[in-house]
Structures are given as structure tokens and as C-alpha cells.
Amino acid sequence: MENRIEALAQLLQDLIDGLPPEQVRQTYQTSLGSVSALDLARAENLLVARGVTIEAIQRASALHTDLVLGRLAADASGRLDQADGHPARVFVGENEGLLLFLENRFKPDLEACLATGSEPDRLNLLAALSDLGALVRHYDRKENLFFPFLEREGLTAPAKVMWGVDQIIRELMKLLEEAVREQELPTRRVRLIADRLLPQVERMVRQENEILMPMLLGCLTADDWILAAQESEQYGLVFNKGITGASNSDAAVWLQRQTGSAKRDAPREEGKINLPSGRLTVEQLTCMLNTLPTDLTFIDSDDVVQYYSEGKHQVFARTRTIIGRNVFLCHPPQLVPRIRQLIESFRSGRKDQAIVPVRKGNRLDLVRYYAVRDESGAYMGTVEVTEEISGIIDLVAGK
Image (cartoon, rainbow, N blue to C red; front, side, top):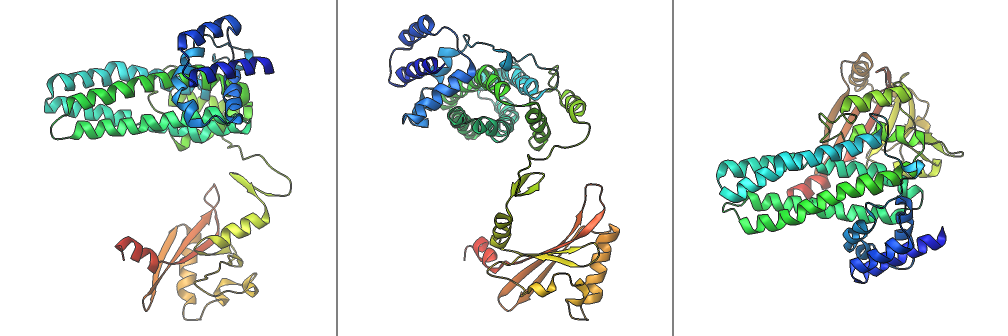
């Protein structure tokens, strides 16, 4: 295995160094034949370990892709024949929809605009560019949801290289839209940008389908895929309308079959406070809360103060003697009716928040109250968030 990875890494290095791709391809075919997607990931990681920069690998990314695509071994762990709604099937289905969008809408609108330069054709192309912008969400989901699984396995190089190419595609889409919006359509520049953009997008589709997904299928556990499906809701699915096996309903049905309606929590770790979305030591949590530029106070459902943060610049002075104290005893009698009314409005569900600005000379404090509820909507308490915002207002005003 190590010799195989070494040999593949050398071929990738040869492409970076400028050897003719056909020469490298012949060596690849005679000495290695087919490789797996994980082999490619390990080879790129090896190059980074040897001091090759991510930028150098990224510049040769297209050559690396062309070298291995079509000859990747489909091992049992990396097969893409996933059930309808499986996150891998959905992701590949999005790419299927993206290619259909490019062929049936974007490219025709582009050619029409370049041919006529008319205002209706320009507007059609701008609308198509707007719809193409959904690709950003596809890339965001890949980078923030899928890449961490590769990084967990130590496969950091492929993620960084692919992310760099994604960013180039984002910039090209932005440049293309800016060019199309110019008063006098710069036909030549539009063509040049489009001729860079479209091959990049189409090559990324192949990289995702034939390299990234097999990598992930070789790394992720069943629970990982469930987590990926759950968290995909944060980004939404794109280009998947009418794609069999990859629709929103397919994804929802698959997830329901795996978990019911329960959402998986982050993995637990001994010695830490285990929260649904992560885990922290008591020290980390304390320092984090005390670093925030806000005072936080939590009053439980029995109106008892249970916590306050101890930041360096407290807006309202507090001492630890208030812990366990009834909140109505912590305020002047004149304010108690107003505070009681606010908390009762939270408890009854009539309100969820209240914001009170407090001015003291040139200083402006913002006091915000939020009802804390559990997933069923039951009242759990009130959190008070206080912040001195005079400096923020000056910053916004450019003072």
C-alpha cells in the first residue's frame, strides 16, 4: 500500500513540475492501473507532508483529476449505488440537476446574449446567473458539512485543494455577473470569463461524484451519514427538483427511516459538558462566556437566578451572592411590577423577547430579555443579555 501511494504521489509531483501529461498518463497506466479515491487523497496528503504547498497542488488540480478520472477503482466501501435519499445520492443528484441546468438554460441564455446583446437576452442571462448562484450553497454544504469528516481521518489536503477551486468558481461567477451588468456589454470579457467558469464547474462535478463521494463513503459511518442528512437542512438542497432519488422528499423519507424524528447529538466525551452541538470543558465554557462583550444572566422557571457571566467589563455589577436568589428581590421595589409582568408574558407565551435601551449620559446600554423554551415550547426561564453599545454606534457612524 505504501509503495503504491508513494508511486502515485510521484506522478502527481511530476504533473506539478510540468512533465507532459501524456507521458505521466502512460506511466500511470503501465505502473499503477487503477487507484481508489482514498489512494488519491493519501497521495496528496503525502505531497503536503513533503512540503508541497496547497496552492501548487491546486494549480495542478485539473491535471490530477484528468489523470485518475475514469480509472478509479470502485471498492466496496466507495460504491455510489446508494438508496434514494441517502446524502451521497442526494449530493450526486444535485450535480445531475446542475448539469441539466447548464445545458438546458444557462448555456443557451449565454449564447443568446453574446449573439444579440439585446436587453431581453441580457436580462435572461442575469436571471440564469442568479439561479446559478445557488451553487454557492452546494459548495458551502460540502465545505462545512462533508470536509470535516475527511479532516477527521487526516485527509486534509483534498479538502483544502477542492475548497480553493470552489473559491475560484465563486469569484468567476461574481466577475461574470459584474461584466453582464455593465451598461455596454463587454462581449469578449463575458466570453473569456464564461470559458473559464464552465469547465471549472463541470470538472468539479466529476471530482465530487467520482473522487469526493467515494472518499466519503470510505470514511463515514452510518451515524455520520445521518448527521450529514440532518445538518443539510441548514443549507438546503439545490438543483435537485425532479431528480429521482435526490428530491427533498426523498431526503426526508430516508432520514425518517433512519432515525424517526430524533436529531442526533454530537459525540459525547468523558470529562466535558456534552451539548447537542459540541462539547466543552467547564474552563472553556466559563472563559468563553466571560469573553463575550455582554453580561448574561439566567433566571430559571421558578424565577431564581441560576447563573451570570463574569466578564471584565460588566455593565451591571453583580456578585455571586445573587445565585439562588429570587429575581424579584434583586431589583428595587419600583421595578419589580414591570419585571414580573415581563416574565409572566414570557411564561404565558405572549412574548418571546423584549429590548430596553438605557441611556446614561453619553453611554448607551442595550438590555435584551429572551424567553428560554424547550423543544416543545415549554417555558424554562429567562436570559438577560446586556451590552454597552456606544462604541458600536460610533463605529457604524464612522466616528
